[in-house]
Image (cartoon, rainbow, N blue to C red; front, side, top):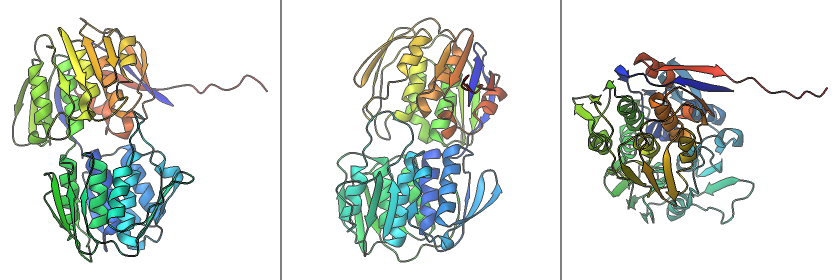
Length: 428
């Protein structure tokens, strides 16, 4: 068990290099199951969720050869199992992507109900609806926490998603690329990582068209071959460091990004008073003066991403005036607000709406990360706060941020990782 200790008040200045996109990496690693030869995947973020995906692939029978910390060769030809072990799947929500890829390869998939961050009910009914439309049989009742899907032959079909779901859009793509005939996904998610997964599948020989729009057309193919592929940079990692610059009155240049993917984030930070400039593959954020209040509503892409909502809340906690955040994607994503209140934030939550009355400063104190992005918000608040903050439950943060401490330390953050002593019983 470990925690982060942060001494707030330092102005962050310097350069940070952004890693591969977590939300693209996990389904792409799952999609390798569909190939008939070795795939070399580069720009894999060195985070616990990616390592867990590789463990799942090995458990299924794949051969993994690590080229360096961000590049691996995966040989899926030796995969013989269609069952993802429960002890691995329970720690990561994205384990459900193996349902689509295993179903597409074997016509059978058995995966336990996914784990990961808990910030509200996140059903996978749209995933299962998509599989059933392709001809798969899915039990009406999930027994022993395991999801079973099977099909003699997947057949292309038209599928309308009742809600815009990134996970369901990708999972149906994975199942449909080798199905017989044509599949059309309507009301599809348009996020950059959806496009990246489609590009990866097409590089392997799939025929996926329309990714990035609300209608995706997939013409099934018989064989997908091995490829070399580099994952896109992480939009949310970049946005988080942009928020760190704003929180500390800093000056940070982010390298290796796709500025277009950051447009909604950049727009809100400019509204708060930040200077945000862009070049081919970098974004420069300078903050001078107080943070201005603004209102934020999360929306599917190209709207403001829900995965940046907690980080922006940490900024609005110290902004001048009153700000309103409306969360339109997930229920119960404001659990972190209690932790901000411990630091002195003035905020009220009513369902999917949070109102922040900005305070002049936050004060360091012990807090915890209640989920991945909430943990990032605690870090941002700690960097801006007076005094020392200790953040516990950092395993959530390390699910999604590569070399988090090292990158922050490189731009001037006073931060370290410390071990938490194990409490043992006094009884003999």
